[in-house]
Image (cartoon, rainbow over all chains, first blue to last red; front, side, top):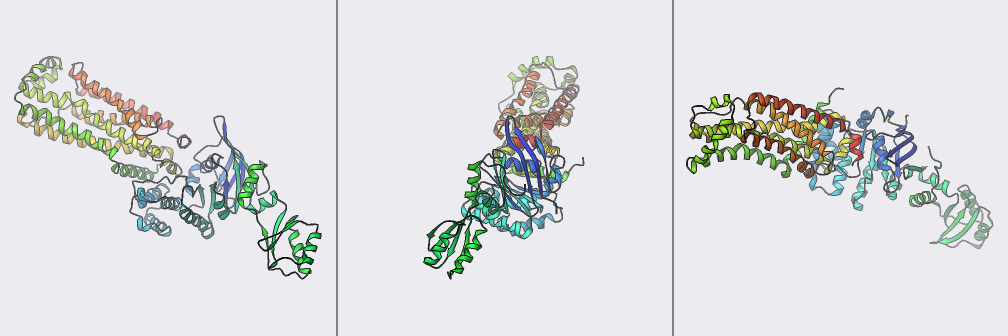
Length: 318
Length: 274
């Protein structure tokens, strides 16, 4: 199956400023990809380049097999974009907003009214469909904006900061919606965010961008493995380890340090491969193991390690 | 390129619906034509009747009458001084003011459609749709052009009615419109709309708000005021020939302005400024 997005050496300059600097990236079909970075890192510019509303200074990109430089209009008809601000017409009703965009996206006239009704129902907005959007809460506006981006059933969705400015409940609703879009409908989602929790919940892979340069790409776990070889393992023994277990663990060369935490034995091991070895050794001393869990690095730790380290592109499917 | 008229009309409908919901936009489009079409002729004809024969005005009319072209003199020959005043003031002297209607309507709507769209932060989502730059531009031009044409024609009809009704007690017949009004309404007036549109679109690309665009385009009223003063001062007089020439000039200017505006209207430029 073809890649949803292929980017090769994409560069965009505004005067002397390089907003996007030789970006290389591939996003697979059905994938939820998160582009993470601080404000001004180049996330929105990337979306604009990929949606064909901004011309690249150098490099090339394909979206859904179409060239962004020469087939921008076709790309725009096949992708949905959720902009950072909802961009809705507040003096129009929700239904009128959707009918307008249905016309602009070329949804067949005979199916448009029903399609509008369906998406309004799906996103729980039909009871307010005839109200002016100006009377909507921020969360409802964002939901309507997502609805608008989905109206023409795009294969690829660009979501630019979809939860910015929303209260936790509204943000949760939006992230649940995005999750469902990918899981249920198999759409490719390109998510730009600086919200790390959101990215952790939603993304199969992430890319970290700063000052227009892609610093790292990969699945969070994959990136963590490349950033930190050592792994912390929690072993639940239902209490303090016996002296026998303690001595045995202390003697193992792959165990680098150990301590008790919350009634669990916490071991720092050389790498993931050492985990079964440690478990076998404890079992061998008749230690009873009730649970084993490799402690994963949070996306926040990964992100700041990448940002702080200023590492070049590492691993992933570049 | 095949034109996507469905998308173009969607833009027109959307902008006009938005206009109807915004008092700041539609109020000047109602007040100006109403003042010029209803209030002005009523004041012209009814006030003199209420305050007695306008002798002073008829005395002032003498130097003006000396300067009007011969063919116009023949048109008002045989009329009383008051009737001459009625014909000249309603049909010729205030005629340039009528051009304010298409100008105001087109520039207010263009300012709302171009600068207002950006100000309301609704432009970006529009730029992500498949509509072509030129289709979006044409849609937004029609938003200004069609109501300007409609309101101008309606104002002309109302003005004709009010002038004939309120001047009937002086003229004792239907006397409006004279021949020169036809090129004014159907040739110069749409040209003025196009000039208003072109200028406002160009101004809108440089300013940030609807109000700034509207205020800056207000300067377009000045040539119309000068035209009226020129007539009153006897520098020239509105007749069919002059209107056909003036209309051609206005159309050329308008088309040139629209051409420049169309060339600079690019989503890549627009999005870079958001």
